[in-house]
Amino acid sequence: MHQLTLAEIARGLADKKFSSEELTKVLLARIAQLDPQLNSFISLTEDLALKQAKAADTRRANGESGALLGAPIAHKDLFCTQGIRTSCGSKMLDNFKAPYDATVVARLAAAGAVTLGKTNMDEFAMGSANESSYYGAVKNPWNLEHVPGGSSGGSAAAVAARLLPAATGTDTGGSIRQPAALTNLTGLKPTYGRVSRWGMIAYASSLDQGGPLARTAEDCAILLQGMAGFDPNDSTSIDEPVPDYSASLNGSLQGLRIGVPKEYFSPGLDPRIADLVMASVEELKKLGAVVKEISLPNMQHAIPAYYVIAPAEASSNLSRFDGVRFGYRCEDPKNLEDLYKRSRGEGFGTEVQRRIMVGAYALSAGYYDAYYLKAQKIRRLIKNDFMAAFNEVDIILGPTTPNPAWKLGAKNSDPVAAYLEDVYTITANLAGLPGLSMPAGFVDGLPVGVQLLAPYFQEGRLLNVAHQYQLNTDWHTRTPTGF
Image (cartoon, rainbow, N blue to C red):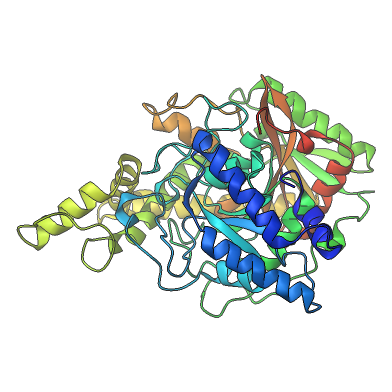
């Protein structure tokens, strides 16, 4: 049962081959057996899962149907879940139980999805390796000595190890697509505003976006269908109709115009990954796509712009964690200033502190124009580059990451080296565009992903291309040894 995809689970439940309760018990036992190797979960919700599974079986018995009805999933531990610890991977929120459900959680629960637990993540979603979590690093099931990518590494590792068929993640600078690439999954970052951020603990509000992680594009379409849609509680949510993503999966790629930016093939890209990217281009050409070289001239400025904007927004968002209202509070504070300083100093980890300090500096009176304002201007230039490119092509294709997964701890002493792993993903967040990573091969036994980018609200196009590619390749079907 653990090898079934979401789509196969939906068919099995509809045909009464097994019940949601049976499936849930199998996967909970599998998590208990195998997750100690991976550390992909922070909290398991066995009682809730079995309750939801029984309710889903009852709904099916009463004639209801739906692709998510009775399907087991997990949530990245920054989606608020009522009465359940929502830690954001931080000591700061280790004792926090959310008083309400995030919109994403509520929508998926209403569709009948079964929540098995909350997955591990980089602290406050700050990281590219899932090593900054208060609960310890997550291991990559393809090689337990390597990182799974971050910050949604717990969700990615759990799905890749077949502990469950799909999970939610969030993407601020590549945090769905990058771990998807490093663990052989399909991961989708929707258009900014397509999925509600209400109840999603914020890192950088103008960049964060929730999305699905699964083994196939077909499964991502199913999960996104349940997540997407306008939410009046979220002022950045877009009131735009949600198409039937599954209905567009089988469209022909004949005449599809694919652009490959020349800037992607710089000296920082592992040449073996470059070869796999071009192999995926050839595969899509066989399916009728037309490929041309394009340029994104301002891509070189993306990382410095991102690492001003994101920390600036983080320093503002994280100011609420002060030891007064909720979360970690230091012992025996001498006065209010001592309460603030020690609660934050003891509650936040090193990477979070680093980004708060960078962000506060960039927003300070003497440096706002020199750093933050200039970064926002670069952001506009990057968006303009994409708009010009999409006048020529329908899809942009390139590597998701410059390297395969690195060893645990290899970049801990050099945070800039870790930041550079996001070079291909952060531009989509800066521009608010949808992006998808799909499995495209292996380097030294470690998975490699190819990234697709599309114009605003064209998630269906991304899923269609990825699905057609997956019908003609088998990379996404490979399973890590031992899982």
